[in-house]
Amino acid sequence: MAARLLLRTCPLRVLQLRGGTAARPLQRAMASVGGIPTDEEQATGLERRTLQALKQGKDPYSILKPKQYTGTKTDPHIVPSIGNKRLVGCLCEEDNTAIVWFWLHEGEPQRCPECGSHYKLVHHELPH
Image (cartoon, rainbow, N blue to C red; front, side, top):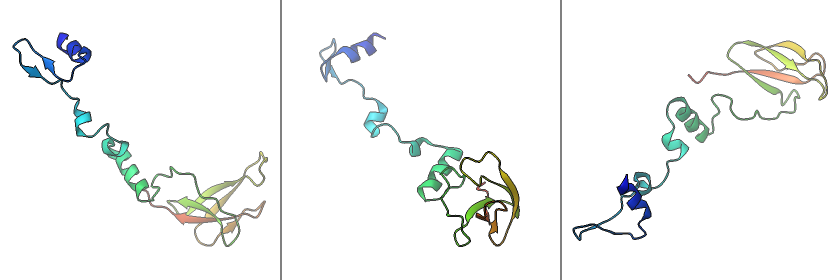
């Protein structure tokens, strides 16, 4: 304990010990290696795989905000699914409180029965 206090309070770079010998204060391990490790350097497991995929431009767990589509027949809203059909809810107007639910099947884009926006089901592989 006293040695640690001595190392902290000593203003000199070299300490003078009793026998007349000189000793340098100990360096911290991270400072001598190059600093504090980054998130990528210390991530493990699922977090590491996710960071590596994001670095490659992939979004395996749908972390990022979905892209905006116009909802027309040529540019439909993309709905990922692991099956060949999925239940979709459409808020037809911005301030609407009622959700229009309909089944979306794989293949051609389908229209919302209420507002006419187009949706397309795209097969999505799970990353694990």
